[in-house]
Image (cartoon, rainbow, N blue to C red; front, side, top):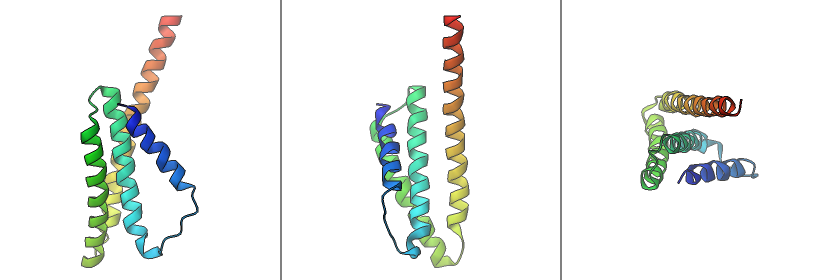
Length: 118
């Protein structure tokens, strides 16, 4: 089931290039929701690599994390606190962690296949 998060990543990149115009007031909510979505996608890819992927956990995590990130941004605006920035830092840290583990796995697999061939 590794194809599901990869499909989500492809769809996300396709949506990125569509000429979509939204009011600037939605920027904090949409940016955090997008970051949360990427966090879920890369977490799903990582779980697939580790053999721990479950599609129900991925889908529910994607929806809940995306909505929760937008709610944090909204609550931050109501309180006058930039919770969007704090949440963005936390989500970016998780995205980079997942990407580093995916990269490490890929490099290890590449090195192992070269050893077997040589």
